[in-house]
Amino acid sequence: MTQVAESVSVEVAGAVVIIPKDVVVNAWIERVMAGVAPAAAALPQPITLSDLRPGERYAGLILGKDEEPGYHLILLPGAVEDKTWEQAKEWAASVGGELPTRREQSLLFANLRDEFEGAWYWSGEQYAGDSNFAWLQTFSDGGQDYGHKNNEFRARAVRRLTI
Image (cartoon, rainbow, N blue to C red; front, top):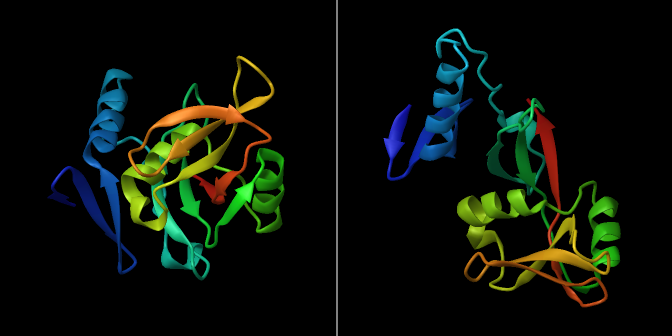
């Protein structure tokens, strides 16, 4: 592994996977604090080129929370615009994916920002304070906010590979 700027690059089956440095460090610290030696800990299974379908982009690793498994996040090709939240969810399902969570949108902004227009995109998360609203992220500056589900915004779909 070599360190490049604020990320760690790992060559996997001829492809380079870039993981934010703080994700690697935090995962190592969590394992040490749990009393598991890093060398003995189970490492995430690397993603290979055969795991990606044509047009897909590898976004990165999402660490599991609360004993849930982690997963690799894959951005699917294609985008739609001028869709309500329900329409965006239906479109994502029709291309074999789902709308990304807020956490996943943050990773997409960090690692694949150039794959997005500088506009608002629906997340798959409903706003807890009012069921008429859902979360959005802008890819111009990474801000997150919520909007009425009947408003029309852009959408991208993702899929997940459990580790």
